[in-house]
Length: 617
Image 1 (cartoon, helix red, strand yellow):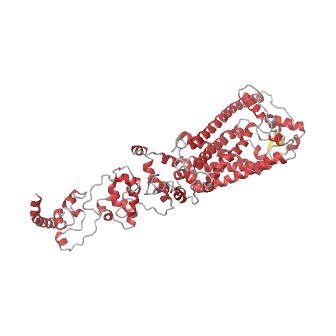
Image 2 (image 1 turned 180 degrees about the vertical axis):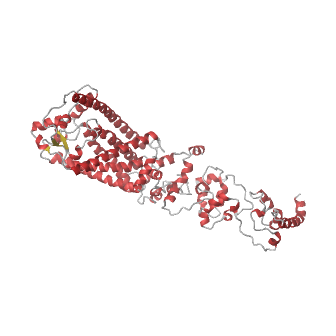
């Protein structure tokens, strides 16, 4: 049959030329067989017929050839094919790509235009096309992705999965937002797909742990240019298993990989668990038990104090109604001379320190909570309001600096109280556990018991000395917080310095402690502390003693009766007498500041509750 076809081919060609000329004269398409009569040396009739364009006539693409005779006499200049006439979608994508900017046209990639077949989602064909120009892709072919694609796994990543088929965007400035986002976004497309990963027996721990890290939180908040993305550690094309000597995450290469961002990285520094999961007890026991300990601290502290708050809230409400009933019946719960005479409770230094505490704590909360809850819409809005995570980080560090300042002041004042002051009797231990000290003592146990009895309507409301047990707890919490939050915060602030003396996994531990202790501090201050000082029925809406340093005699006798009795026995009550603060401007500004701080804290508490109830977005 083949010999018969070859014998009659010249005759068929002559007939085709005659027929093609006749059809062209009538304005009809030229038969492809006519074209192949001359171009069969370059174009295989069988390959063309089997190609994606095989059903089209040659003049469907070469539309400028309208007269075969003129074409054969070379009177018609053949123009470049306009692929966009049919491939409108692909053309639109191509015209928005980096290829068009570089002058790369359709035929530059599709060099097999006359033999081109349907790719049928076979990524091997995509790789073969791209590697025609991008010869550096040889490293991709050796990667886990490249090897999987070559082996026929169409779930593995090929060029088009990351860069698209036709809409190939320029990466631009390596430090730009779009470039930095690209480093992680394209990896997430596959690695966050749980079904796809399960099908290929690949864990999604990498994505989950990355998103819980400082790097991932910044990426999710919309600032990938400030942190490392997937490709920064694993490279873009040469992604290899950890045990491969050529892998960027091989232990032998980690210092070099980390040093791209952390210039002073050491072998100790690289022991950081990049994808450590605190829920994995087998692989990461240190992280697991740290998390368990911090969770126990959170649950225990909130459990005890929230119950304490609820009981106090109800008992205080009942007490206020009892007082109102007595007033209505003509009785008065207190009859005393000079009931509203003012006495000095705090000095100016105390007021100044408390303003520092409020300022720094709110600043740390406003900038830290959006990072903690980076999966929330409000967190993104807050970060944008600050002008980005870098600005938020700067504010956070300034506020941390203020925290260290007032902590140093507290240490100096404590030393002065214990060893230097002459107006307080007793030696070091007597002062430490005496009534003017903020150190817990045996009396606090009695106070707690009596307070609980009052909550349960089993006894009278207790009166206290200069400091209550909940005030002492707040003060001690500052010291604990400075070591927990402050210490871990310093480690995370200066990782390269601490990485010279501590193993990298210490930063994983520091992250858990810093995050959970900050959650404990903010949750406690904005709920328990706010209630104890401002929200309880007898103080609502705010106790201004910390802003003006003064307390009325009636209030002092009712709340700190034992302190009054001690001062009265020592004959020093009038030593603390003072005039009511008369500065209207001062009162207005400071009280305004107090209310702003209070409402800001309550708003943050509501956002935190929303984050826990609503989950991630």
